[in-house]
Image (cartoon, rainbow, N blue to C red; front, top):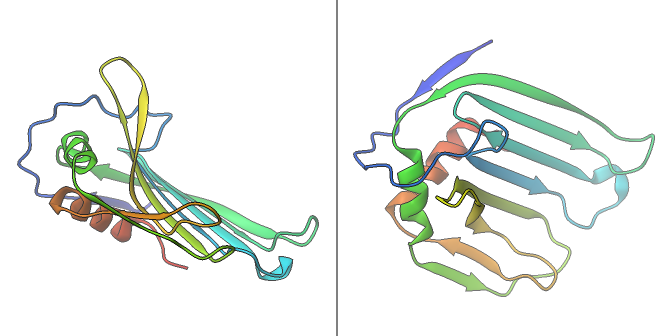
Length: 154
């Protein structure tokens, strides 16, 4: 397996607990939206401290879909828990989005001191009845760059 070592170059002090091995640190998803079943697709990329798991599915009809799952070993470096905490406090823009279009979402996860898993939406294209959202700031930019480096584009 290919092992990549990524350096985020962060000089932050960690104040939040890390996501557990069962929960990803970052999840990037991409869905086709409303299309004919044979054109449907989904990509889910979960980034953990020690691995990246990518699941791709093509087609949406039973018996007429295919896909694969890939796991790559990685070693995340830097204080990503602190970076997620900083991103959670950054400003967020929202806008109205069209219905039934493709969707792209980027979410970071952190475990709070009380043990609760919190999701921090970094970016979401929205959908039917759900506004698009995007955080802006340096911590969000670092996490987005990490996801763009490790998760494939379709």
